[in-house]
Figure 1 (cartoon, rainbow, N blue to C red):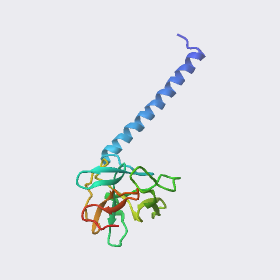
Figure 2: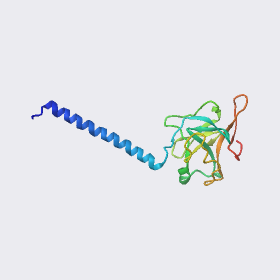
Figure 3: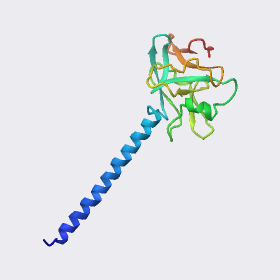
Figure 4: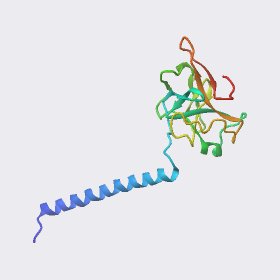
Length: 175
């Protein structure tokens, strides 16, 4: 049977679309395997700081998952530290974090990280995520002392007038 020009063109389009679909599916599988190999996918940026309630600590700050401050004894979080503690940084193009209900926006700010990103701060203290926390309210990093004198969850104490006093998690030093 003789193929017409129209049949040959249709066949080429089918082959091209099949290859494109295979490329997309392959990329999706690779991405899924990569995330699976690393464990749970982690948030890399946040532009809004929110609150969550935790039974033992009360109201805490979160940005997708729980955020902490680190007391590193005046040192910086190095490469080893950064494997467990991920800086809460703003997305590219964002210059200022937002505060949801219950968070005092005046206490939010940023500092320039070594890589040039803007790391979110609360009352001047840089915020971090703990790699083993997977949801808001997880506090697996609370009290961790491997890289300094302690990691503390940032708690928010309710106050009249909406200013909101704060201190850091259990056993922490008040801001």
